[in-house]
Amino acid sequence: MSRIVYVNGDYVPEEEAKVSIFDRGFLMADGVYEVTSVLGGKLIDFDGHAKRLERSLSELDMAMPMSADDLLAIHRELVAKNGIDEGMIYLQVTRGAPGDRDFAFPPEDTPLTVVLFTQNKPGLADSPVAKQGIKVISIEDIRWGRRDIKTVQLLYPSMGKMMAKKAGVDDAWMVEDGAVTEGTSNNAYIVKNGTIITRQLSTDILHGITRAAVLRFAAEAQMKVEERPFTIEEAQDADEAFITSASTFVMPVVEVDGATVGTGRPGPVAARLREIYLEESRNAAI
Ligand code: PDD
Image 1 (tube, rainbow, N blue to C red):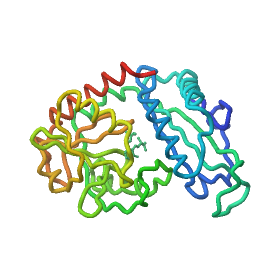
Image 2: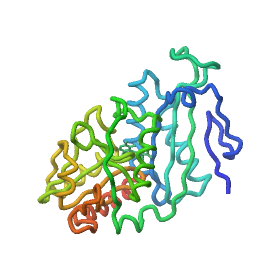
Image 3: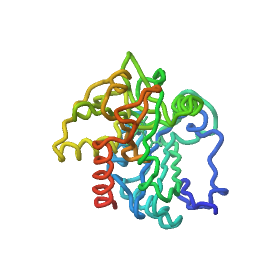
Image 4: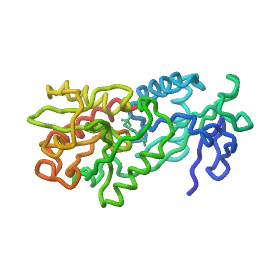
């Protein structure tokens, strides 16, 4: 069944949605995006995603195309029109379509392109994968230097995902100067002697909205958190490992570069954090 999507002010069936071939997103990857999850027909962490969108845009000299309240209304309208109970809403804003190709930014009054669509994922929260855990390989992080901006330049993460698939595993953790930066589309963590270790925020990684919530819940539950870089060897020697993102919530990692992590089964810290995150997020969903 065809989805109803949002494109530049209109709600249309996906086959009818059109964006110019001159769109800067298409020609230059000149755009940013957000993925917000939906549980029980409600949006998880919407405020965090709206704030990060504003920051990503501002770092690239773009303004919010509309207020966060208007964005919220569009998200809700799409959830309703497409009958989404569990899934994701993808939002993309690009620098618009100036009508030709040019490296220089177009005039500031060029309308930004705004596109949103739903991804229906029944059973997202109760994923059987979370009960097994995922396996990762490490790859070199050769992305650009502003990974804190959520741009649509996803070619290398996409290639990383394919390298993982080719190696018969689920995802890849990227490594720079000997330390893990993050997963292809998620933040990375290990647990050693009860302490949760994850790389500190900087321009090297995306400031995950799920990460912020999970670290807050961990602190509230009196868990110890250390924000610092860690190596693949540390991960292989850890008691547990996991990732976080809007689409996976908290997902245990049970193998890193062929080495079993801990018992090879999801560990208690990751399992507990997943439980707390899902419960608290459902309660706070809007
Ligand atoms: N990815 N790091 C990277 C590189 C990401 O692409 C993402 C999100 C995250 C986690 O951020 P958050 O918790 O705000 O989702 C970390 C989304 C889900 C995606 O590209 O589909």
